[in-house]
Length: 198
Image (cartoon, rainbow, N blue to C red):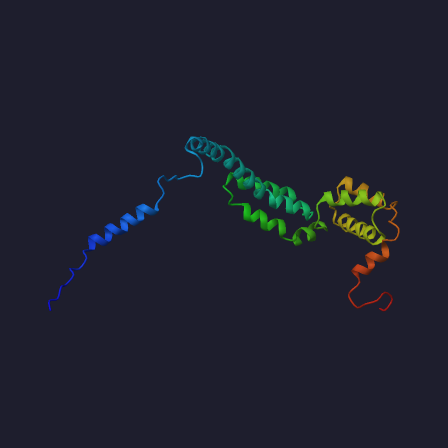
C-alpha cells in the first residue's frame, strides 16, 4: 500500500484567502464623513469661523466673569474694603492674574483689624441700605437697636461720615416693624433656652 502525503499549504496561500475574504466584506465605496462631499467644505468653513470668532470672545467673557468674582463676593458680604478688592482685581488683569488669589482671599477674610480701628466690619453701603429699610419701617425692634448700636460704636471711634451721622439722627425717629420682634429674638435665643427661663 502506497502512502500519499499532502504537501503543506504555504503561508502565502492563507494570506491570499484572507485578503480575498476581506475585500468581499468591505463596501464598494467609503466616506470619511457623514456629510456629502459638497457640504463638507461649507461645514469646515463654518466651524473655522466659529472657532476663530466666538471661542476667543467666550473665553474673554468667562475670564472676566471669574476675574471680578472676588469683587462681587466682597460686595455681597458688605466687606468694608470692597473698593480696594475691586482695585486689586483690576491690577491683577495687568499682572496676568497673579494677584487674583489675593483678592479672592481678601474678599472672604473677616476684617478684624478694621473693626478694631473703625468699630464696624461692614461697608457704608450696608448702613445706607439698612437705614432706608429702617425709615420704611421694615426692620424689627432688635434689628433697629442693633443698627443704632453699631452706628454709636462707630461714632465713638470717630469714623462716622456726615451722611452716617445724619442717618443716626434719623434712626431716633424710626419705628420698628410690627410683629417681627418676637420672631427675631426666638432665632437668636440659644437652643433649649426658653424665654424668661434665665
